[in-house]
Image (cartoon, rainbow, N blue to C red; front, side, top):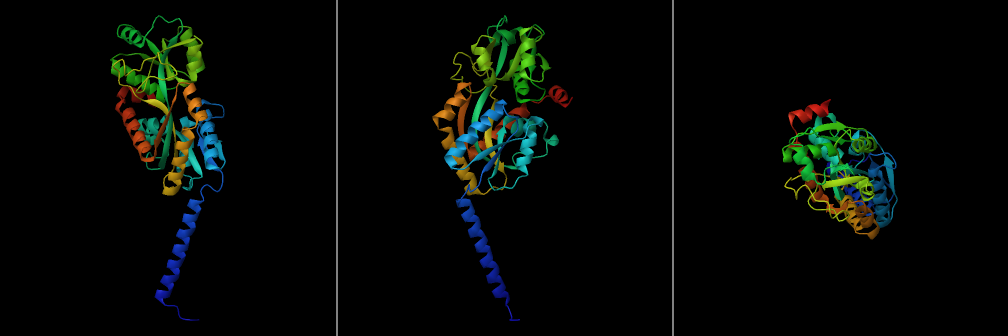
Length: 328
């Protein structure tokens, strides 16, 4: 057998290394060469699922490759987040991230979720923000949020939500803290039963993401008193923000895209660029704005900072009483 020197072995290994890097670079430059899977933590037909399918369709058009929605409902979106956190970091498995699984859960109960934020994810970009809102029945005696909150200082009032520890529930806890009032929290399984009981007088108000209920407001079935966020929604210009009322409650229901940590930089950059293109299209923009949400083109590192700041907002709202309620 011919003698092979260490130098020769090193040269062969280096050649294979360069070949591997070249192949990897070529694969990244050809991305995407196969369908992309977008994991959505909602069942088909749900609010988040509709946004997921909208952005999957728009991304598919700009990328020139199919983006398939994979519904993995359960645990408030945490099952979907865990699946993507453990997926191969090649850009072909993405998560429709949202405030619930990437901000609320990491802030309120980090020990109970099987993934870590931000460690397990690479941010691609924010898609939209939908404000939370304080609703009352159409025949309620409260005409403004200030009237209701002032009444709560002298009366035992209640508010409904769609679950203890959910983003909207924590949002109303922030409103209560900022206003210096106490209100009884009544959790429901879904907005339908909550609204029925509110109209029937069993609860005084309902705090929820505004977008799914805009049509009922326009039809006169519900009255929206105020919304979270920095500014009024163009779809409902007459509804003030809590910030205008002196209550600095900025948390919203947001959706964005993330990939598993370790996804190559060129792939993340390409996905982010194409997400920005998708958000700029009239059909996506109009679909988002129609229901009082707002498109938000916040790419890459800025989106990562946005998530970190949102986690801190939720952490700041934690009180012993709130943590006890969530733990039950």
